[in-house]
Length: 450
Image 1 (cartoon, rainbow, N blue to C red):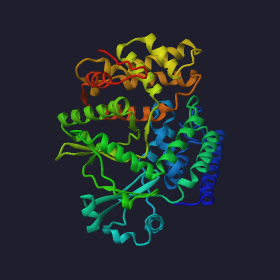
Image 2: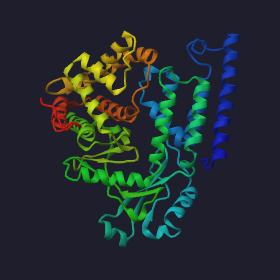
Image 3: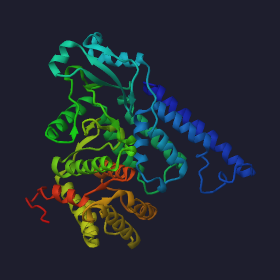
Image 4: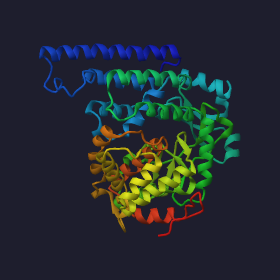
């Protein structure tokens, strides 16, 4: 993986050149009539040929860092709001996993923990078992002395990719130029805001000390939880670029479709509960919805939480207004949805009627699971298709980008909804919503009464 700014700039430049030649070739084919019927469609960008899709995926997965993070952020957008080609790019980038060689890992860990760091481990597997946008994870066993101190032996050691933290700003600037040049994204997605949010979150996630603090905080918040467990930190073997924590057993939730209906209902219910608790009880949320960050242990019935780099708190005023939006959606109150959406910043009050209606319709759709009394069946829902139908209108007519807090918040909530849909889970959404939000105290001391 390229680790310095010059080499990373070269890779972005070579990608742009490759895309340019690919686009020129495709344009020539279309002009001469030699292209396929699909490629000759005027609605398909000349940049989005099969060869260029492969170029983008290969380059972004090798660059990782900002490139992969932005791809992951944009991949939560509904695929119907963008071309099939860019949706494929984002999905393939999201699922990719390129590891860096052990020589680069050694260099980073030597600098962070000292040249004798291996002496602290009874064993350390040089081959990583997982990779993410900014680091990869190795399995290891602690040495006897540290094991006695912390009370466990098997650990996961996350090591940050070299050069990622120092290249965030330049990488994002290069990516923005590339996306604008190639017109890969539809209008109305406010790329500048996505870049700004990605920049902030990447700086957060590159600070493993910040993540260690968030992990410790979640460990305290969930200490008595009957379902969720959080890895324990090994602080003596953690730093700004290395994070060592207890190894958690379990299967990724992306493999949970094969479980019985009872277990799928159990998982979906508690994932939804956690999202609501994070917002309106803890007021502190882990906003990365990657299903690989949740491990279900079928022996204990516990769900382990991983990767706290994207954890964040929210301003109390924002939470007050956001809860009012959700409450209005649950009540089916169109005027309250419009009012609180304007107060929150989703609307300016000057939108065309078609935009206001599309926005309110989508908010009411999101409130459907909480509006249904008893059990809501995510396996028989139409929320996603109904919201999807409003997206083109909102992209075309919106006058302002969504509030910045909602980029990460909606990434997590949409991940929870999509997981419940994938599991076809049956969840008592209204009971969960009322039970948790009735304990929330607004800034003025008021509480909801149901």
